[in-house]
Amino acid sequence: MIIILAGFTVGGVALCLGPNWMFFWVGAGIVAIGGVVALVVDIFSDVIVDAPRMPMDQAHRGH
Image 1 (cartoon, one colour):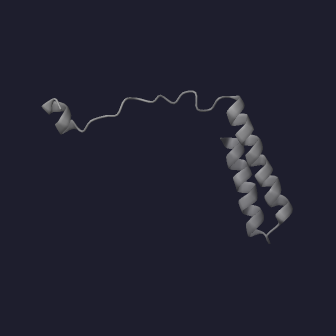
Image 2: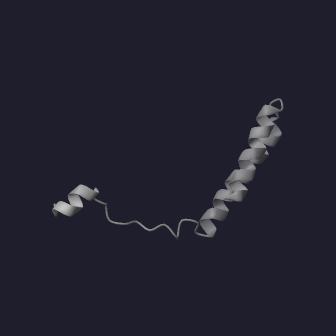
């Protein structure tokens, strides 16, 4: 996530400074590398999908 944030920051600063398209594309490349790293380390492996939750009033009525 830090790699993607760094790439986004580089690209954003590059757009504010001119725009400087070379640094913008460097930032976009850093974001792409960060995406590949996120897939390699399986960044979403700790996400747990639970069953849908019911509001408290329905849970007490037994519906």
